[in-house]
Amino acid sequence: MLRRYSLFVLIIFLTSFQSDSFKSSQLKYSRVRQAYKEKENTISALLENNQIDKNKLNIYLRAFKKEKQIELWAKNNSDTKFTLIKTYEVCRTSGVIGPKRKQGDLQIPEGYYHINRFNPVSNYHLSLGINYPNKSDKILGEKSKLGGDIFIHGDCVTIGCLPITDNQIKELYIICIEAKNNGQTTIPVTIFPSKLTPEEYKTLTDEFRTDSDKIGLWTDLKKGYDLFNETKELPTIGFLKSGRHRVN
Image 1 (tube, one colour):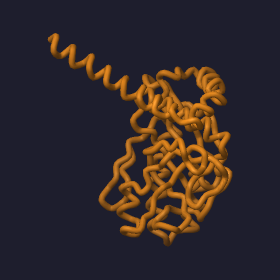
Image 2 (tube, helix red, strand yellow; image 1 turned 120 degrees about the horizontal axis):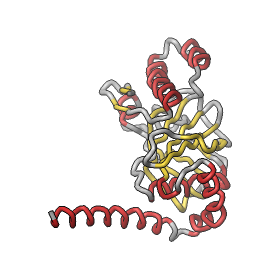
Image 3 (cartoon, rainbow, N blue to C red; image 1 turned 120 degrees about the vertical axis):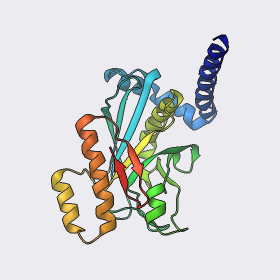
């Protein structure tokens, strides 16, 4: 029994140490320290106004290409339902409606993703990496020429990323640090062509009715869009061998 208890304590200690080490490692960079100096009070007030404990922060990002918006949803990690706490404006986009299928097509990806990198010395001030290509992209995209390096970042230039200006990325970047620091190992990001209301979805599917690639992806995205809007809980996403998704 003592051995089991000691193992449990060790696991808790290591988890805490790893989290603290992540935030500490980020704070070694001057841009991150400056972001905290400028934005920490704003973020604390934002979370407090939405009854969210910074030490229990769990987040979800939804991006909409047509509307040029990134929604920040948050909850306490002991809760199930998310609350929309802020919307960031995307200051510039590139490409057209539809997924990214190859390197150099200037497309902003569409699909189910997560944050996989934090870059405190980005060419665009601070940046949050998106795990493009995901499993679906690797199946449906142009083999060996998929490209990569898709970020949410500062500044206002893009060839496939989501720039939100230096001012806004300072805030979002440290919110993501806080979520990861509190044990959120996966920060999900869903990128939609637009807000998939019934009217918008019909418009898209009518316009691209002969494009099975787009229609298939948008059908899967709409399932997740509707489920989340209804429940405010994250759907479970599975990747199928066909490149399509299982959404529950």
